[in-house]
Image (cartoon, rainbow, N blue to C red):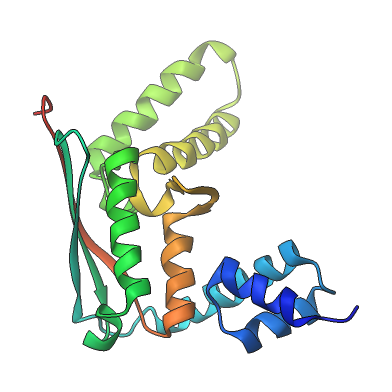
Length: 198
């Protein structure tokens, strides 16, 4: 199938990745737009892993205040250089993550940040829910691990489905920006405030 300039342009608009990368992905996927997006995501993930150890000493603090003035968010987004911190795509990412935090209410950045006591309490609740099902202990543990995955999606920012595209996690959203901008990007701390919440 012939890869047209319009196809490359559309893929670039949908992903934000460079023209040559988009053309290669379309060639690799036989012109299928969705498969090309999947190819670019995989490549972006690989690039993100390569850059994950690089130091991120620059970045921005972003904020979001909901229109009623009762919900506010602060979030740190780190990158490697001031040049990228001033980039409009990076600044949009900060805003979008702050907006996501306001809507999705994450409690932790990642599963590694969940205190052991909270994790053990969640496991105990799941086991208690399963106790009447008379399943062997090894099956119960597999179910517990599966339900923990759902728990992480609810409470961990990086595992949450992005509110504007639930096929993409916040982790994947950040990784796609790493691929696009060519620098390591990490979410630092975040805080969500809501009137009426302690």
